[in-house]
Length: 216
Image (tube, rainbow, N blue to C red; front, side, top):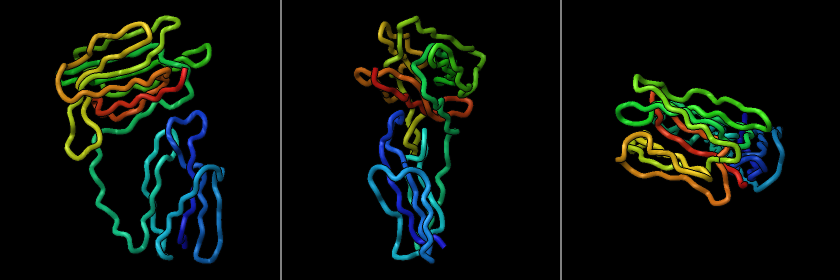
């Protein structure tokens, strides 16, 4: 049986966040198995020789948080998840086109076309287009997306909220505010960075949006 896990974490090139770089499993019989590359700082999951029952954690572009459930650790009751997680993950050079759709209470649909080298990559549909239709924002040559802002409606007990409105900022202009001018404000912009991807949560509407950026 597994009794402990030793892991390393680091912030490798091309990843926005710190991620798990290796996992080393040790059993009660002294056997070990290593997966990944042992670079970065180390930490150990273990509990006085207790039997390891399972894992919990967080993932984005890679596994960026990890914990363990042990024989004497109470397993918490799962919290209901609002919205399905999505992510346009990839090593892109920027954003070329944005499609945005609204509904009566906010943002219902998002879709992005990304620049990759000399070509374009179309991301997945997020949310659902309503009877209000959708609008497109096309960035010109040399124009890049650098920030977003708008309003959201908090959801009790959740670390995110329903997106009520959104505005995009490029190195040349700001778009109109799409959606409602009410709720809690959010914004993202990093100096000398451009946005190259997005992640979030959605069902038939957008519940969360998080940009991924890299230095220009």
